[in-house]
Length: 96
Image 1 (cartoon, rainbow, N blue to C red):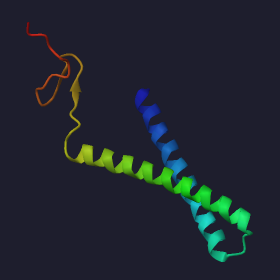
Image 2 (image 1 turned 30 degrees about the vertical axis):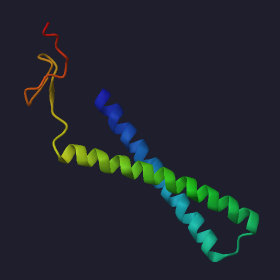
Image 3 (image 1 turned 60 degrees about the vertical axis):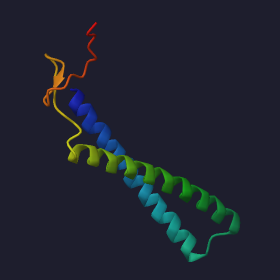
């Protein structure tokens, strides 16, 4: 069941990204036409900047996740032994 929740969370994040991006495109189109009153244009600009920053953060996180996965930094974990498949322990051991 946790895997399903993770997939659902990823889908919601993707949906949120797509919604933000679509709204950002609407704002750009409205501002480019020049038919927006100044006060509304400033408000749209601010909203667009916030949307842009949110999309950028989400893209950077996705790039980082892909880099971690592709470089093999994620190793399958054996719950019984407490070790990853590369032989290293995920639990700090006390030798003394």
